[in-house]
Amino acid sequence: MKAKQILGIVVGILALLLLLAGWWGYQQNSEKLGLMKENEGLTSELSDMQNLKMDLEREIDSLQVTYNALEVVNDSLQTSLTEAKETINRRDRSIRVLKTANKKTVKSNEAELGSLRDQIQSLLATKATLEASILNLQSENDSLRVRTGVLEQDLSTVREEKAALSSLNTSMEKELKRLTLANFQASAFRVEVEKRKPKVTSKSRRAKRIKVSFDLTNVPEEYQGVRPVYLAITDEKSTPIKLKNPIKAMVKINGQATDIIAAEAKEVNVTPNQRLSFTHDLAQKLRKGYYRILVYTDVGLLGASSVQLR
Image 1 (tube, rainbow, N blue to C red):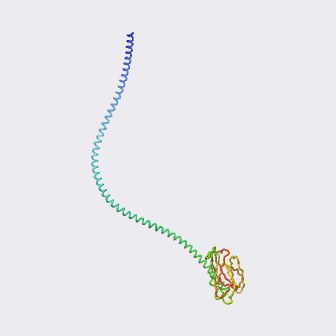
Image 2: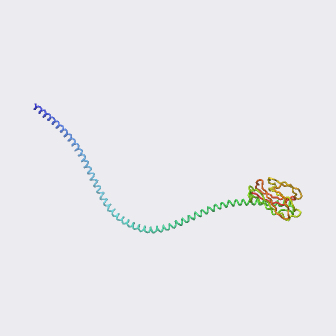
Image 3: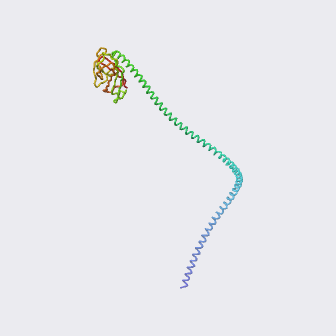
């Protein structure tokens, strides 16, 4: 029984060894095939390496030729470099000389430039002053032109007004010679137009009162004594101004009875020489124009004057 067991074990071991031998043979065959394939790849790679070696040898030969040519060129370049260095050194020396001279020139130019800047600033300031003066003069000239135009217009107006006043005075003088008594006349008329405050004005819209004064001189005895004296105010067309309390009176002019409308009236003791005055507060504003101031007494027209309101 033991022999059979031993034999079985031996058979099993042999079978196992046989299997192992078969597996090893298979492994060896597979490894051999792999080595053969690897060998073929190495052979092919070796062939490629040989071809590459030949290519490299040819390239090295070409590079050697190029190197030899470059050596020749390099020798030439070394010579040129030496010459270039010498040229550069000469140039550097020239540049240093030029820089030294240039520094002196720059300093001189800077000083001159500073002086020129100062002169330019001074000239600019002078220019600005002159421009401002020119603008002021232009403004003054424009103002003067305007003022001259206004003055010329005013002068023209004054001339016209003077002519009109002269004509009015001439007319009044003729009328006075015709209407007044030869030896009983008023003279030295003074007519003032005042504003609300006692200040003289010639503006119609500001006129508030009219003050009139005149002289009676060398009055004949027959006209002396207590007499009524009337103040009348009319426009240039002899139309009385509007009055708050008009005074109607009758006087004789050249022996003819004449109705008048007076603004003021008073009883006066007429003496040989005296100065009389009237003050009349205006009832309303007067228009621009010329106005006549007439003074009457019961026996005639004593005198007249005129005033202009603008």
